[in-house]
Length: 472
Image (tube, rainbow, N blue to C red; front, side, top):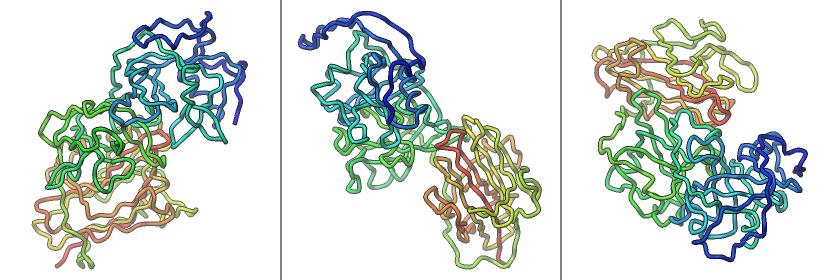
C-alpha cells in the first residue's frame, strides 16, 4: 500500500482555490447550493493514474484534493447496490471509477447525471474484482465508505447533466472503457436466450445465483461481430422481466465479472434497451455432429511445415485476409512450454496497438455435390486467449474473392471444438471429426480470429493439422 502525499499528486491536476464552509447537509434536498470547493480539483483520470503508476492500493492522506465526476449508475431498479459509478464528462468520457458507499438508496440524492465532488483524503483507490474502485482501506482491502461519513466525502453540485452514451463496437471493448456509460448498436440476445418454448428473463431463472448472465451478440454487417455478457442482479426489481426478442441498442456500464474473467455490461433499467427491430441476425448452424472415423480419401491436408516462420500463411489454396487491424495468420514454431508441434499457423493481436483485430484463414472450396461423407478435423492451442476468440465458420455463397468475404453469409459449425481460454495453454485440443455431409453446394471453411491490442483482448491462437476427408 502507498500513502500518497501532496507532493506526489501533481498528475493531471487543475488548481482551484476557494473556501469551503461547513456543508449544510441538514437542509432539505430540494434546496441545493453550488458548493464552494477548497483544495485542488483533479479528474478521475488522475486518480486512476495514481493507481496505475503504483500498481498497488494508494491511500490519499493530507493531499487536500477533490475529484470531480458525473453519476452514471442508478440503484432505483436494484441492479446496483451501495455503489456510485462516476465518469469524468457527460459526453465523450475518458475515465470512470466505482465508489463503494455503505448507504442505500442512492438515487434519491445522487441521481443519474448529477455532478459531484469527492474529497479524497481518507480514501483509497485499488483493484477489486478486476475494477479500480474508491473506498476505505481496511485490512488491505477496499471497503465501503461508512454511511456516517459519506457527506464528509461526497458533495453534490447543482448541475444535473444529460449523459450521452459513448458509442463503441464490441471488437473495441477494453479496460479503456471500464466504468463508462456506453452504447452498443445493432445487437441482440443469443437465440438460446430468447427463442423457443422457454425464453429467459433478465435474472429469474432457477440457475441464476447472485447474477443472471445473458449473451448479447453483434449484428454488425461489416463482419466485425462479437459478443458480451449482460449481467443483472437477482435482487433487481426487473429480474423477472422477459428479455426482448428483437435487436437494437443497449446503454449500460462496462465492467468485469466477479472473478475478473471477462467483460460484462450492467444496465440501470430495462429502459436502457431499445430492441424495437423485430428482424434478427441469427447465423445458420450446420450441425451434422461428430463421426468416429473419417473417410479414407484426403481432399485437403496442411500441417504448415512448408511455411516460413513469422511470414503470412500462403499457398495450398488458403485465403489469408486481414479485415481489421494489422495482424494476419502467420507460421510459427516454438519448443518452449507451449510447443507448436513443429510449425503451426498462429494469430495474435498482442502488442499490435490495434483498436480491433480481425483475421481470417479460409480453406479452398469443397464441393459437397461430388464428394461423399465429408468431414473436417484440426487441432487448436492458445497462449492465454483472454477475451479474444476464434470461430469456425462456413459459407456456401462466398465467391472466393477476399474483398467480398464480409458480404457472404457465414454460418457456424457448432460441433467443432475450439480451445477455450481456461484450457491448459500447453496442450493441443482436437476438434473431433466434424461431419459436413448434411451440407450442400460448394463450401469454404474459415478460422476467424477477433481481438485487439488491449491486454484483456490480445490473446493468441494456434492452428495445426487441418484435414478434410471424404468417403469413396
